[in-house]
Amino acid sequence: MSSRRNFINKVALGSLGMTTLSAWSKDLKNKSVSISRTTVLKPLIISTWNHGLAANEEALRQLEKGKSAIDAIVSGVGVCEADPDNRSVGYGGLPDREGHVTLDACIMDAKSNCGSVSFLQEIKHPIAVAKKVLQETPHVMLSGKGAQDFALSQGFLKENLLTSESKKDWEEWLKKSKYKPVINMENHDTISMLVLDENGDLSGGCTTSGAAWKMHGRVGDSPIIGAGLFSDNDVGAAAATGLGEAVIRTAGSAMVVELMRQGKSPFEACKEIVERIYNKHKDHKDMDYLQVGFIAVNKNGEHGGYSLRSGFNFAVYDSENGNRMEDSQFKMSWEN
Image 1 (cartoon, rainbow, N blue to C red):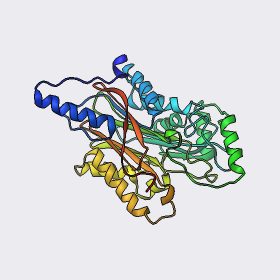
Image 2: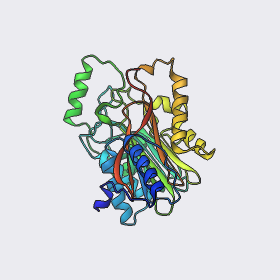
Image 3: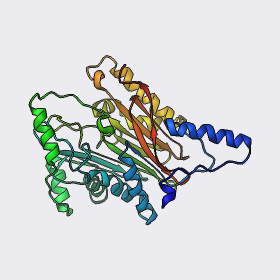
Image 4: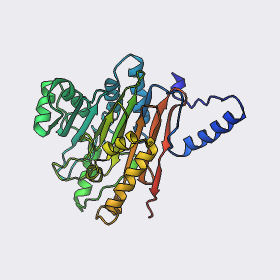
C-alpha cells in the first residue's frame, strides 16, 4: 500500500537512461508535461486540485477490489463530496445568493455511456446520482426537482447540505452582495477525475457545488458532457476546472479530446484550448478574474494539464511514481 503513497523512482540502466530519468523527474516535480512511454502504466488516475490526493487513494482502493472504473470514480470523488471542509464540492459547498447549496455532476464510461445531474439540492453525492442516471434511465441529464425526485426514488436521502461555516460565509457575503468568482482560493475548485484502468479503458467524472454566490438556478460546465468532461475510449479523456461559463463557450473538454485525436499530446491539447479561451475572453468582462484549467490523458498513458493563470495543480497516481501532486504550466500569473 505504501508504494502508491510515495514517489518511486526506478533507475534506468546506462548513462543515457540515467540522464533522461533525471531530467524527467525534475520536470515531473515542478510542472505538468506529457510523458511519452513505450509501456503504459495502468491504472492511471488523475484528478484536479489537492483534494484529488484523497480521491485518488480511494479510487485506487476500489480498483484493487475489482470494482469498475466508474465505481472507483464515484467512491473517489465522493470522499470530497462528503468533506464539510471542502467548500466547493458537495456537503459544505458554498451556497448560491439565495442561500441554497446546489450541486452538479457528470460521469462517462468507456463505452461513451454518460449520466449527469444539474441544479440538484439536498442530496450529498450528486456523482452517485449521475451514475444512476447512466445506468437506470434512457437519458443523459436530469435537472432540478426532477433530479432530486429521481435520486429519492433510487434510495438517496434528503440532507441539509448548508453547514454552519458556509452559512456564516453566506451571511457575511450578503452584507455587500458583490458577486465575483474567486478561483484558486483554498487551492481547490471543482474535482474532476480521469481513470485509465487495467484494461486500458478510459472513464471520467466531475462534481461541484458550483460558483459561490451564483444566481439561483445557475449551472456551470461541470455537468455538461463535452464542456466539463469528455472521454472517447479510442483517443483519450479530458476534464476542466475553473470558470464554467468560459469552458462552455468553447466546449472545452471535447475540444481537448479532438486535438488529441489529431495527434496532439495531452499537454499540447490542453494548452491549445486554454489559448483559445484566452483569445475569446481577453477583452471580455470576465477576464479580470478568469481562471480555467484542463487535465487530459490519452490511450498511451500520457497525461498533462495546463491553465490560464498560475495556481492550478492536480493529483496523479501511477504504479511507478505513486500518488503525488503536479503543478500545471500556465499562460500568465495573477499579476498579469
